[in-house]
Image 1 (cartoon, rainbow, N blue to C red):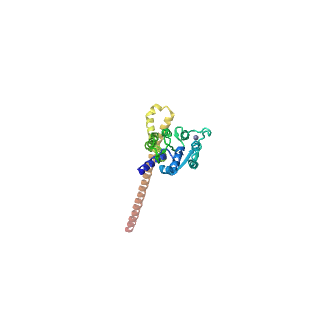
Image 2 (cartoon, rainbow, N blue to C red; image 1 turned 180 degrees about the vertical axis):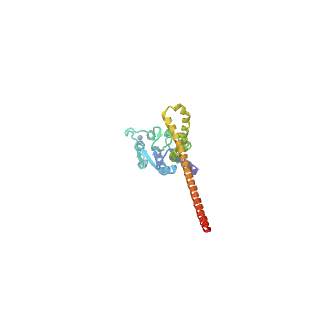
Image 3 (cartoon, protein in one colour; image 1 turned 60 degrees about the vertical axis):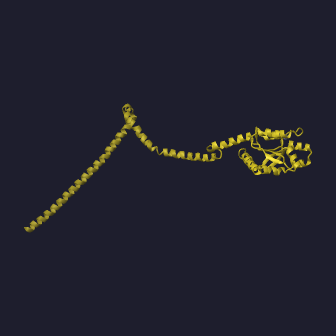
Length: 291
Ligand SMILES: [Zn+2]
């Protein structure tokens, strides 16, 4: 039974830690009555608190609660309470509030447990009032057993909202926000690259230019009067001329080749002439020898 309760308390404190961002040591406001009872029953209050929240607590007492203790004239309880850190509530010293009023006023700021107090009180009315405020761990003592109240409905609602926020927003924010930003960064880095890639596709715009040129010739009749288009049309003619001139070199080369071939032919002819002349000479010589 104790282990089971310890486990549930551990779970509960986990909720206060994560959903309500409590930090150790837990600031624990004590009312005068719980201090008095602990002193009376020799209950180790600090040890009990540490065991209940399963972590270190910082026991605190408000000025009003301290004054209420002075009124009890329980020297032992007063001495015990003097060890605890005094929480300045700034309530009128001469007209102190009741401990429950004081603690509620200190704990609840704008409907929230702003300073993340644990409240240990025997005042059931105060616990009822604080149960409405989300994220207020409530501790009391019943028959010398220190008990932490289960999560209030208000606390559960916030816990569910926080957890569902983590689940639904898992890909959107919270801890994964950093990862997502990195992803966005990668996308942002990738996007320019894709733009650069689309830039190289700009050469494909060359095909777009061709498309532009194609419609213009079609509109040449309409825009023929405009000099710009005629000028644009002329370069094509020039290009065609260039093309023709390009053919001309070929013709020249052909001519050259023809000339070369003619020269070769001439050379051949010369050669043949030479050969023939040589033959003629030989024949002549032979004839002369014969003669
Ligand atoms: Zn006060």
